[in-house]
Length: 153
Image 1 (cartoon, one colour):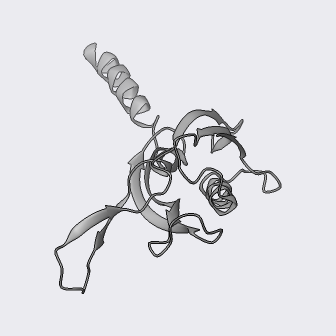
Image 2: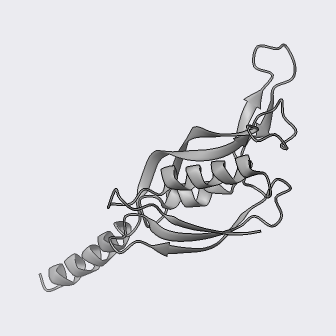
């Protein structure tokens, strides 16, 4: 019977660490380049909501990880060609340099994104889409605020 308190203590430690992350079946707002464009047109980029499943501390953590990672989708569906997958995320050229957690730990209040390797970094449509995706992906508890996005060009 003396081991019962010790076992309960160990179990509570194990269970407390399992609650330290957020499992998410959610969506991410990706910046996508229209396949019919060369990326130089102002309307070449748009936001596409895509499903993700992830596990990362904050509720928006999976979105932060997926924001600049490859997101492959099937192509040639119904075209009779080979079934292949193509990355649609236009931000795979970017890198998250830093992300500051919001005071309530529900999102990120400030993100620094290095887009210096992106060939479209000077396209106003691309910059607009990046800022829009950040606003969607990282909403603030105070609806009057927007995530501060620092872009390194």
